[in-house]
Image (tube, rainbow over all chains, first blue to last red; front, side):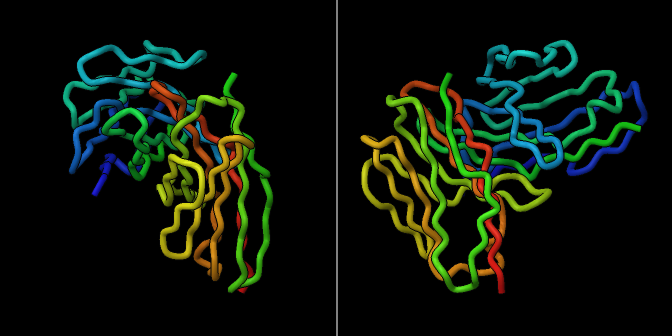
Length: 115
Length: 111
């Protein structure tokens, strides 16, 4: 149980392109979903927290106009990296949680490379 | 500022030995505690959850919680080379939406 699916696994695209990443909870309803970014050999960095049907809460320093998050249903959240540039290249990971106090379950991550 | 501290390692243990990973946290109101394993280039995977003082065992893994000392540990018995990974301690406070992660301890199990 508690499976989170994230697509795509890999994205390579040109600078200026917008990229959408999907995160789905397959066997539970996720009241809250989270988006993280991780650079090589560094810790997970929380980008934003989203609750179904409401606007995402972004961490300090994360541009909300660049990283658009939509949590339209209890099983789906999307992250769109708008006008991506090489410095946005990173490993993006989503997680989902059913209830407060319960663990977060992570997707497999999306490796984004902007040329 | 809520903090979760872990020894970054690397922690090296021989195959078959017990690996002991430690974590301390600053928020005395924390109520949920988790251990995740992250292989290089992969996303974190939940391996243990613990909510009350004492031990929680699952196969070769035992999580230990001492709220008075604000201390969580993970023991891995009969360590295998496949256990080589970074182990992340994560803590959640009462009513908190977020997890606070430690920076992780890198474990190497030597064959």
